[in-house]
Image 1 (tube, rainbow, N blue to C red):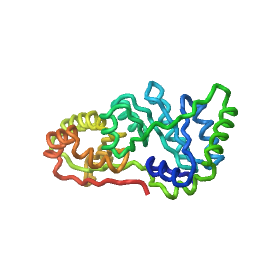
Image 2: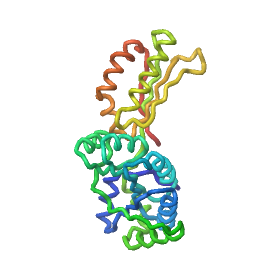
Image 3: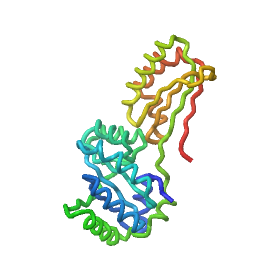
Image 4: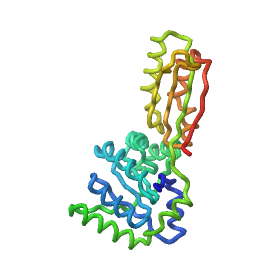
Length: 256
């Protein structure tokens, strides 16, 4: 059965207590991703996928997260963030730990519940083909004594799960006003750190009790609080949303 992503702090603590090293591997392309994932799956070993904050991150991180969630051993997605903007973008794309090179970057990540950890000594694989890279990763996992520890680590670490912030509501203004409000909110709220996706919609059934919906996905549970008090959210909610959406229901959901 696939294992969800896990809390980075928990996994690092567990590795130290059990006497194995958590191996980090620099992922520069899909060949690297395939080699590391294949070896980690075969060895039942936790791994850390390390991605640099450069132009490749926006393409690699969605693929890494999708592959990571299919593995049977715990995985970390670590971004080496050069800037606060890079860290925000990385969290939006699924990173669950950050190596921060600036204090403001670390503060933003921590406010979103994303652990800020020391840089993992990431192995860089040479251009030698997938099979050779897989063999190299396997050898490193065995040297680190992490082979076979995946199941135990997964049971001892908190899951890293996103949260769905759901608001169903009726809007007292016109349909055009509602559309303009949603378009503004979708653009502004999506830029708040820890927000990974914003969906706005209208009920298919015109007779539904609630006519409209917001679905805002948070990177972690901690974002519930940081989002609520973020100046962008406060300004939009108090100025454009709440005065016209007094009939509303708000619930936060996380995966089971």
